[in-house]
Image (tube, rainbow, N blue to C red; front, side):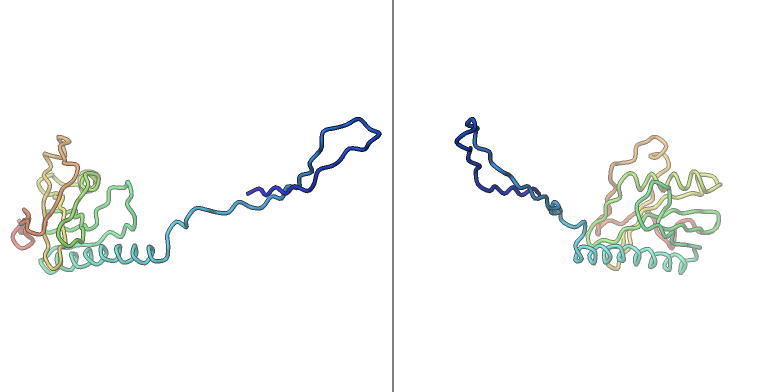
Length: 184
């Protein structure tokens, strides 16, 4: 910010040629005020932490639920969305491998195409077995209820994944932890 102060006008002397009056300026330069808001307010930081804890909580609960049903499961602690193809949870039961993407919501959960694509890339690039034994699953923790949907390999291979996959609280899903893929 620049502040300009003016002080008086100089008069010309009678025995010199008339000149235009000269005005003196004193310029004071002060640092520019930062008019941008801070990146995050303290209240926003607390809300963001609480929102992220919800996701971590659901992931931990699902790992325990999978272990209770005979799966070997582990939560993959990736704290931010990244381009690396890592699921939220990886599980195994017999010859079957599962990659889970998990959301915690009240009534519905949306899964963007990019997150589903990561599941398939993870299974395709890092799990050395046949496709019949690799499963990409999305799961929504809706209150006390869990709903799971398995996404088909055919959709991924033909590049026909929808832009968003939605799970509603009233949906049944197409995957059941107790009955699906029992040890072969």
